[in-house]
Length: 336
Image (cartoon, rainbow, N blue to C red; front, side):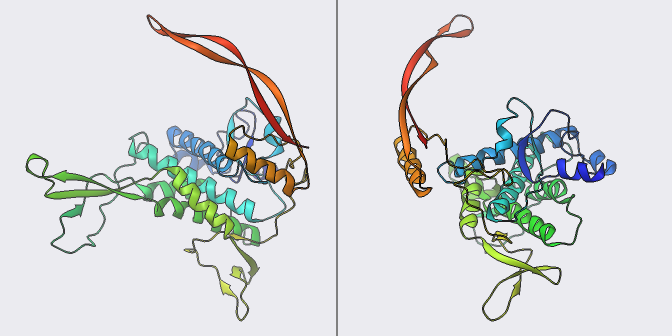
């Protein structure tokens, strides 16, 4: 039972499962740890998982690997929850999923903390002065508490990883890369002080950027991920002269295994393959998608389809919006 629960309810991969299967997604935590989390914090972690999945799919929608898993198709309408599947390969896609998931949960917890939605979470500690004495601004205000967000996300993501093997080290490292990516994208926001809006002096604090900015950083890290091997209980980067241990502060994603061919369907990896992939209708995405079909030695087929959409919407006093249903014609391009 313990082994089964570990496989089903660990934080790593996005799939759709029945509501309640994993006890709000935190069954890998001890009873004491669950008591430390308010229900709002647990709900926030779930929302972060969904944010990460949506961002992953946005970033890779025009790539051969598009952050899709076949299991999702058979569980539509059920509760989206963040859990782990024991995938056989610790490749760069797995590394990215760890990072984007960890980043998204960090981001969501920090965001809701800033909105005063999470009990026990307040403003970030004021930064230590780093500018010269005659500067016209200083750190102050109520900064977004990234320290709290990272700590809470680490508890959710890393609690399960209690082994001392290559996969555990791989998971933990890429989790940390995701959390650090959110922190690296914090921006400075300031408030002016002075007579008649003269802004003689400013108080500044750190604030979250958009999560898309973090996502773009992690996608760059995905493309520049570094191969490593596990030796003497450490991940080591492979160098010509001498291998170097991977630092816990290293911002690069790492992977242990090569990626499979995502052009073909693979039940083991969850890859649906490119056959039947539908292209987005906008011109740029369509051109890119057709090139992906060709890259996988497939042809593409374009056919007309019809769909019904809401149209001619009007505001009716008071207070509703009524729409008609219109049939529109569109082009559907798929890889065949």
